[in-house]
Image (cartoon, rainbow, N blue to C red; front, side, top):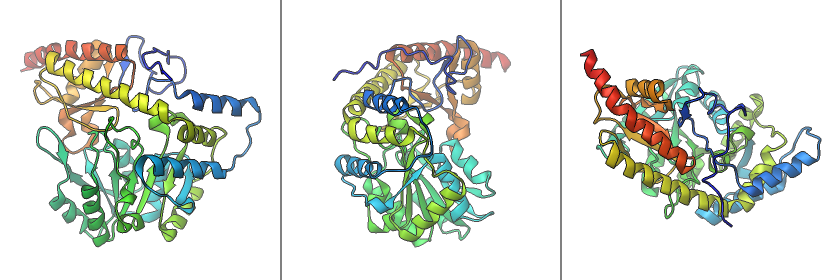
Length: 393
């Protein structure tokens, strides 16, 4: 089947967080896609809506089986049914886990640059961020294991949030790296909370490695958050799952989600997930090809037209991490200037910690015509911004 990812679906006026912007603005910031979801998912939602009654929902056996089959077939990871817990979103799960498995004043380790909401989940609950800065050699990021061990060995560090694949850098962690992280966390009794929401969005030819699949040690000391929301553009349906192989950890995670009232599905969360995992593979693979072509298009455009900005090579996600080291002035100022003067709305890398202050994040999950528009606006912004910066000296 052919899928039309070039279709310019209108999202203004739909209460879209992403598109609640000015008339001439182009939002390429928050991580949701400008593509309609897979036809099978729309059909499942429409069939459920046709019933006309939207009472309390349960989680059927088919939901568990769909996840088990998807992870076994695509990633070779066998998940037992009892390991799975329904959740109303990855971030609610992260916040619940932080509250349940750590105490006020303790530290939660995050590898920066990192998704800014991780910081909110930690600090808003009275915990402290332990920052393990990823090492950047001007081309790609790697784990600084010496610093990681130092931070994990602190008795006040009791949890690590692992982003796999990594947002914003698009880094696909290999099994060796994950196993080494897992061994250090086990050594220092630090629980691993793995956010694997971007797992299905690897480039063609690449496969993500689930953290819990790497070793028995990693499985026994981890809580993994997964969801069809990024892969199939379903963030608004609040549907996620938590994989917890250890029985004691799972009991606590279930109690945390129930205490926070984040364990009850809405009327469309379950049917959409089942449709995604049982009938969405062909659509997803076509999407991955399209996103990969978008990524190549953007990288080639930047190399040719915007030499001061380079894209960090990635193997996963639809997010492009843009290194602005070749431009005059700060990336944060460039971000503001670009939106004010061209309407292009990107994410300011400073919010991601680490060395993020020299970066911008661009969402490529849109029709190529829209992507080309965004890149042209960025090209237009840079010389004007640099001229403006120089005038201030």
